[in-house]
Length: 137
Image (cartoon, rainbow, N blue to C red):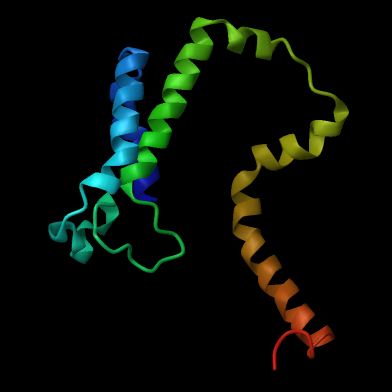
C-alpha cells in the first residue's frame, strides 16, 4: 500500500515533465537497487525503500526502488500515446458483448479482491479433503 500511495503522489511531479526526463528517471529508479544497495538500508525501518542488501521475507513486499520506476515508465508511455493520438483512436473502439464480464470485474475490483482469498482457501481446503492422498504425506 505504501508503494501505491507514494507513486500516486510522487508521480504527479512527472506529469508535466518531458517524457525523456521521466524515462531517464524511471531507468535510474529501476537500476538503482542493482548498484546502490547499502547496509544502512538493511534496518527494518528502511526496507520499504528497496535498497537493503537483503530483501525481507514478505508476500506483499513492493519496495519503492525499482517499482516506482515502472510507474514512471507507465506515465511516459501514456504521455507519448497521448501525443500521438493513440488514446483518441482507442476511445473510438467499441468492445463487443464478450467483454462485459471483464468490464464488470474491472468496475467492481474491490469486492473481487476481497473475496478471492476466502475462495482460494476454500478451494484448497476442498481439494485437501476430496483428494487427501494428493495433498500431502
